[in-house]
Every structure is written in C-alpha cells, then in structure tokens.
Image 1 (tube, rainbow, N blue to C red):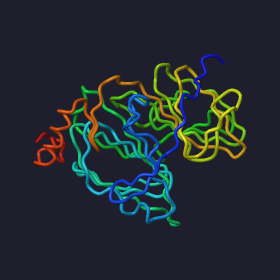
Image 2 (cartoon, rainbow, N blue to C red; image 1 turned 60 degrees about the horizontal axis):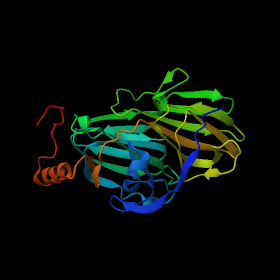
Image 3 (cartoon, rainbow, N blue to C red; image 1 turned 180 degrees about the vertical axis):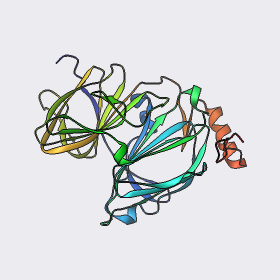
Length: 291
C-alpha cells in the first residue's frame, strides 16, 4: 500500500525524578517540542516497587495545557481546586484541561502485588484557549469502546473515531486521536491516519515492527515517531504487543514552557508564576464561576 509512514526516529525513555520523589521514565519532553507538536510530554510511571511511586505528586499548578493520565494497573487518587476528587484504576483515563489555571494532586497506588502501570501525556492548548475555563473528566474503563478491527487485534478508542466507533472523550480543543492497541502474536494490520498530523506509538508490552520488511523492531519502553503519510503498517512479534497510538494536528505556535505551565511567551510565563505566588492564579471557583 502506498504512502506508508516510515519511522522518523526512535526514542528510549530516560529515568527522572518528579513530584515528591517519583521514579518515572520520560519518553519525550521540552527538548522535543518541535518534533511532537501538539504533544508536549509523555511520562511512563510504571513500577512494581511502591517505594518508587508512593510519594506521589502533591499539590501543584498547571496552566495552558491538558494532561491525560491512562492507568493500566494500580490506581491514582486525585483532587483539584475545582473540587473534583476520585480514583482512577485499571483501564481508566483522567482527562484534565488546565486552561486558565488549576491546582491538583495525584497520588498513585499499586495493585495487590504493588504493581503500577500508567502513562501521562501532556497536550498543548492553542493560544486562543490557553485561558479557557478549566474542566475535568474521569473516563471509566467500561465507557471506553473496545473493538476488534481484525482477528487478534483489539483497539480501545479513548479519543477519536475508528471504524465508525467514537471514543468517549469529545469536545476537545486540540485535534488529537488516542488509541490503545493490543495485537496477538503474528498480527498484521495497516491503519489509515490523517496526513499532516504528528503520529507516534509507544509500546507498553512486547515488540512490534512498523515497516514493510520488519527491518527494525520497537520494543517495550520505546517510542516510534513517524514521518508524514496516510497509513501505518504494524506487525506484532511472536510474543504479541500492546501500545498507545497518538495522532494530532500541529498547532505551529510558539511555546514558552517552565515546569508545569506552558504558554506562548515568556511574559505570559512570568505573569502565571507571579499570580501563583501572590494567590491570584486561579480564575474560577469550585462552582466554575469566575473569581
């Protein structure tokens, strides 16, 4: 099939410490802004050692972005300045739009064996929506459609549309699709995506090939960033594979980024941190009315 996307670059995750001392693997971040637009960051905080994640991510601010947390095993308790609180666990997604500003905390816990498997993605907001009203969505596993697109290939549709089935996350500002593929051993599939969109796959299990001749495999903990085109060819290895597949329309806007806040200019960053320090950061109350 023509117009197959090729692997542009392979990324290996890098160990970092975040929050109050959480050991996680950063797949990409602020040094890769131009490559992943409109995506900003992907962290894999999976571990089977509670000592590496229980310290969690105490209260901290965000502005100008959306954070998307996908839990495969274990759970994360969360609270925010809008009064939202709850727990997301295996298969659930937390989709938070920080907009004009939100302060929240995320505290992870493992399953009965102490295992935690989770990913957090940051998606940029365009300048026109950087200061939009914050909003928050918990999406439970049972509300995320699972479809079999080919024998031995299942896809969970978190955001976007596949084979006429829509994901539960809609009415978003930045145009993206978020899918989770599970392929049995030896599976082979070609998937069509929108030309001009940034597309990457990150493997959570197994090994996969994304080229016609199986010349280069991508394994668990690696990310494949693709060149432009219309289709992706995916072939699982003999052990089977699971991976997230993200597609997004680039914003092509300037990015000013410091810590948990992403704006368009350095002056906007200065304003955000000044407001945070003097107590005027939050623009909306718990009832979503303006301050």
